[in-house]
Image (cartoon, rainbow, N blue to C red; front, side, top):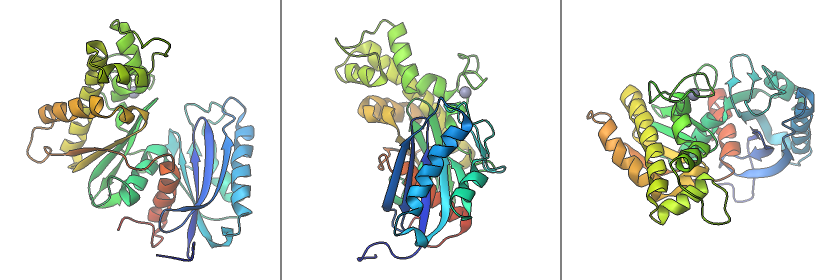
Length: 322
Ligand SMILES: [Zn+2]
């Protein structure tokens, strides 16, 4: 513990999404000690988006703690390409193969920069500070507008060569299922994302409570009240997630599946059927018995995880799960 505040190395973390660009200096206990935030000008050209990133970095450089910063960690909406240092976020059309790593390195005065996908960053955060802490083999997933994820295997984050490993949202669990925007069919995301939970409920005849929009949160509210159509849509999402988790457990032997994101906020109407379906899909002895738990870290998971992922890739002491 450092009772007198931040001492020792800091990682400058960036969490880049379609709506906001968050930055922080993160200490070895996962605490943000200085912050900066800009809205993402997602509809603008690539240089305008980069300008917003550069402003966030400049604000961090102006913080009195900056001299302790030893690296930059970026968790970005994907796809990302950590091999080439580029990003092509689906929701930021101005960035296609955008050279984010060299540009951030320049803005940060030449510090080493580590890029991972946001699902991998969230996983690093949950393993270091959250619900996957103490587990050596974990799948962490974000279920919200999309479905993403990441893996911890043998006690270490497994980002994969390009920083996208563990992207469970685009595993197909329905061979002849609906086309997915990724080009495949029947992906976990196509069945279990928030917009798809809402769409399926509406198509089955469910009506949102008076005065509310037909969102996944509204479906969850109806499901909690016992509406069978709402419950059925969550059950189908839970089934897809269970099949994806079972596939992962069978491939690489995980002990826990951590689920975060807005849809996880539905609580038991998602988690109860998910655990139930999982017993029918994860049947072999080595794949059965996976704990399914909600994520613990909130909105800072992306920042904390970007710092942890960078620290692990660079071998910085102090930033790993204890
Ligand atoms: Zn897909």
